[in-house]
Image (spheres, rainbow, N blue to C red):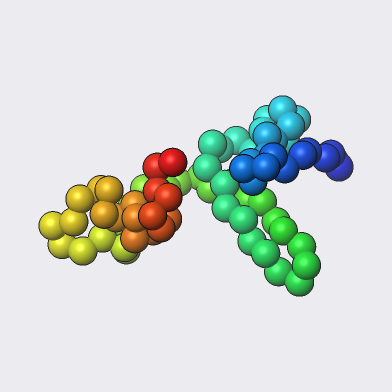
Length: 73
């Protein structure tokens, strides 16, 4: 399948329904290699923040360590 989408001024893209239906997940990862961007479904994110958290850190601190200052926006 080949389809197109527009990138908004905020850098957002709405995935076409046909693409969303094939993903089977609401979480995706992007892989950029050799001038191409690949989008892959992530089936499980359980514990994905654990590697960034310090003992006693709050979830917000772990999110910021993972995603930067814009975490949750």
